[in-house]
Amino acid sequence: MKKRSKVKGLLRVLVILETILLIFLLILIGKVLTESHAEKQAAKKEESVIKGEVVAETEEKQKAAEEKAMREKEEQEKKALEAQTANEQTDGAVNETAENTAPSNAGSADPAEMQTQLENLVNTEYGAGGTVAICAGSVDANDLALVGGGPMQAASLIKLYVAGCVYENYGNVSVYESYAGETEALIGSMIRVSDNDSCNQLVTRLGGGSAENGMALVNQYAANHGFSDTHMGRLMLQPNDVDDNYTSVRDCCNFLKMANAGQLEGSASILEYMKQQERRSKIPSGIPGGVIVGNKTGELSDVENDAAIVYGNSGTYVLCVMSENLIDPYQARQFIARTSGVVYEMMQ
Image (cartoon, rainbow, N blue to C red):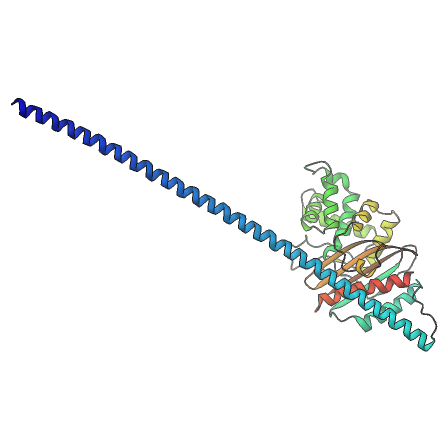
């Protein structure tokens, strides 16, 4: 009996030890599985981060490549224009010597004569399709040379009038600033880099939080200052089947003349921002280096515009070229640069 009792006791101990060992093994297995799962999660997280960094780096490289391609394209256009101008100047010099003709009137700034030469330029060299209009002349002249005209799609040229209207209502706009100087920063961004969001924010703040009211104020501003062909009917990049943004080459030139004379609120600031313009492949590219130019461009898929004030050696003048419904936007940009070079020569 005693032996049997001892055996039973040993069996109980063995069962208890076996149970404890089993529990220990289960705990150990659970710990291993937990650590393995954690390692897998960490690996997945690290892989996700790496993929995100690769995607970000790829997007950054793609953006840099696109910007480089755009700069190279503008540089090629500028070089092509310079080569064309140099060839024409050489041909003109040879023809003048051979034929003993009288000097041309290229240096004349007479509006009627300039208009005739610009009409000839359009008839002989413009081939981009659609409609083109040109306005040019001295800031001191009463009359301007005008080819074509009337309201055309403004694209980002409308931002000149938004800037003028904001300066005229500066106090009402600046109350919405989230930091000191924000209004000025938005105007600068809108003109220098043609930022659409900055323009839309300013228009909405003009209207006290209503874009519709803001656009109405811009239109009233245009009417008050005699810019009769100018109208704002939509925010930037906002689809609108009913209305659009319009201006004319004459309105743009008159705006720049008035700004040069200090007749508009914020004139000096607007002109300074135009001198800092980053898009320089149109009017500025047709003018010799070292000449100060302030310009504001406007582009849509079938629109190429540029308005500029040029501080030439023989005086300051304004030039605006607008083109719409284009078949060949590249040719339109080249034509604007070519027109700029011709007007520069006429104004010297």
